[in-house]
Structure formats: C-alpha cells, structure tokens
Image 1: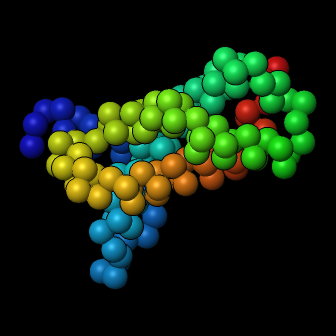
Image 2 (image 1 turned 90 degrees about the horizontal axis):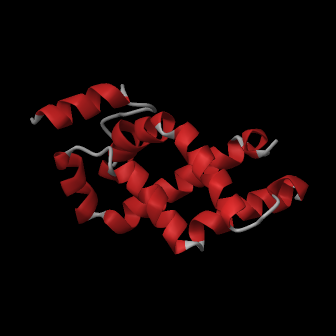
Image 3 (image 1 turned 135 degrees about the vertical axis):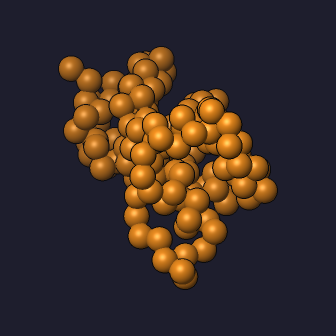
Length: 131
C-alpha cells in the first residue's frame, strides 16, 4: 500500500455504521469508505452548497423548510457541474484500491453517494442559513 493510501485511510478514520457478514459489497463500501469521507468533508460540503446558492443568486434564507429541502435535492441532482464537483470532493479521498472498486460499480455508488450527501445536508438545514 502506498504512502498516500496509508495517509488517506488514517486521515479519514474508522468505518461508520454496521458491518456484518451479511453486508453487501456496496454496504461495505458505504460504511468503510463513503461515510467517513462524508463526515470528514462535511464543512466543505456546506460551504460549497452555500457558495452554489450564492453563485446562482438564490436567497436560500427566504424559503420555507420544504422549499429548502427541494433546493438541496435539486441543486445536487439537477446541477450536473455542482454534482460532479461534490463527487470529486469524495473521490479525491479514495485510495487506489477503493477507486478501482468504485469504477467497477460507479453508477450504483454514485447514487448512494449523492443520496447520502443530500440526506446529510437536509439534516443540517439550520447550518445552511446564511447570516
């Protein structure tokens, strides 16, 4: 294992979530790789989302909770450039081995990543209110 891979695994921390003998390979990847990265990058995701709202001249603070939730979902699912930037923030913290696993199943793992990220942002909606 390369120095970079060792550093990344140490930097990200331990697995998050339940891992059992019945876990699928996608669940293993989610709990061992994706969850620690999402936790580590959380502040960056919030800052990126707020920047995206600002760039698009969207006054996020004036929206109802329901509209804010819809904005989070739409900005990640429909704004391809923004979604790809977020994916890059996650993929950049993969080891080479994890990247090879990812490219074999990128479609499913992308759905999982983006779904988890949307839920993470929605659960922190109060942090997304710009002062």
